[in-house]
Length: 438
Image 1 (cartoon, rainbow, N blue to C red):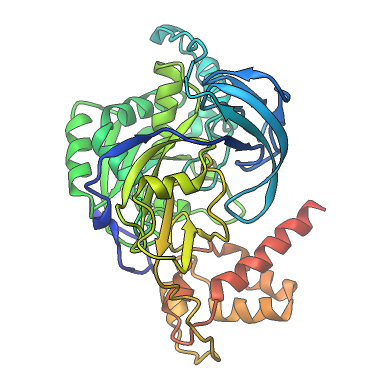
Image 2 (cartoon, rainbow, N blue to C red):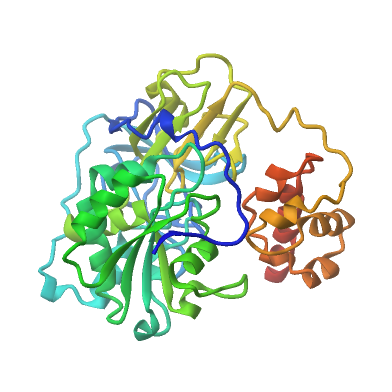
């Protein structure tokens, strides 16, 4: 099937023409590297180095603090300067390892690459865990956990999220165009874990080159197909992606494995390939630097821990002082108060805009037009949920399925009254989740 889609969603300006034809360029850091110990979902990593220690590229500097956690490796060679709280892109200080880069990039010996017959399920999962791989679409969920469901035989689909539905971002697209072999081989490795599963490369149809390249590569692969999806935001959201590719539905109380699915991002799959076939841990990622306030938008292969200011410099700097800088995409990314923060595993893009359109909006009363309901992919009533959230009525919020909101931003985008529906709802969802942990 082609042009698969879901009910609801929007069609914002894509902005991908700024960088979709810009090849990935390696970027070497100039200043100290900062590695937050919490750049993934779950427990913070625990440092295994101390001030004054010498480190190499690929060396473990912090180990997972539990099953749901992730290792962290140095992306440069140098000396540990300190371990102290440092600001991150979301405006929160996180305990971090700071390494002074010696500029030599001396590497640890790569882990041995095993023959296929030695790549048991246990070995694959352990290597993925050792490499510190997480979901690199922004969520940061430790990948080894996602690849360890209760029953491997009940997984029917391994879905690779190639949709990249967020406007402006082209980091995954460039991976698909420049390194499609690694993507396909990475998927084949994951399929070794699930004997009954079919691999699906799910690509929006605004990426015809990627669809063509991937279809040619998997033509002879019995267990892998390419599905062309209708271009619509948020096509790449996990629940929507599972529905449009398999017809199966999940809600906020379920995991993809509950309906026989495993979903991973493009860069995540490529890094699984690198961990297994090259013996390399996760030390770098592709980041799109773009927006109308950037002189030379582009895609960069960035060493984790690199100061975001250096990414802006690599893109030619600002054409003017931007009113807004966003870590991630314009729909679900977070506005940054300071660009002097480290790049992390979940940073897919840095967007800079001359004008902050959102800040210019003056919210007014709801006019009951119903547009937010029409576009909501979670099939809830955002206007009601926002009102309940403002009232602090968590019981009614839950009764009206408030936890089914995926915080995609569609309702805020279409609201003629310019109400910050998503932000208000997200705040209450966050509070309810925090209360559950108490």
